Image (cartoon, rainbow, N blue to C red):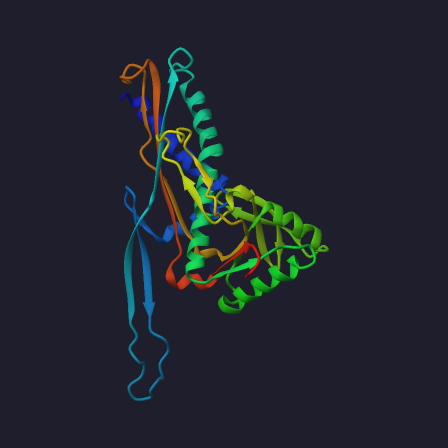
Length: 306
């Protein structure tokens, strides 16, 4: 591999990781990944802190000794996804490779990778919320949606307090219904995600992140890209998937990680399969909610309680 391909790979890795944080509707969840340890590969270490509560101060013996226990729990990123692409040497040479390949990989990540990662994260949150009985079933109507949303925000704040920032992730269809029902209760605001400042609407001080409804379902099938009938790869909702109306989450409760593995680039001379530039793309990603953070999560699913 020539020095140019090594430099290209490093540039692409940095650019693609930055694009994902900025472009994914769930990109803000990666801000919490700063607390984890990552040394390459598909494993991360998440810190768990345990503290004693207050004790009674004694005038003679003074303070009651407290304990701080810091441990790291090893987690594996279960999503190991990838593709390889070839750009024919007739169409691409060394002078325009960076521009063409950058456009191709940027478009691939924008249209294929980001929607899949969003979908996986939201379905994972719903799965964990169901396990912990942190969900509700509700069929939205214009007359009731505003009160229902405010009630569930208040329910979370009653547990976590007003000092914790809450983010609401909402289906675009449901958000439009809320717009019609809100009677100017919603306020315009901004939301910082990576290096991008988004214009959003707020309710009760909480930003509403609008998500295409196709990415906001409870379950998906992720194709391997090789099985007959699945060569296109990607993902789709399962037949029994439910629509998610909204997710209410304390901002620091969700830990999402996505890592672009070493992007490999082979020039046409090195590539043994074809007279073409070859680009190997591999992405590890996953999402976790620490046990003590589940109290800051609530998922509202479209449906009627039986």
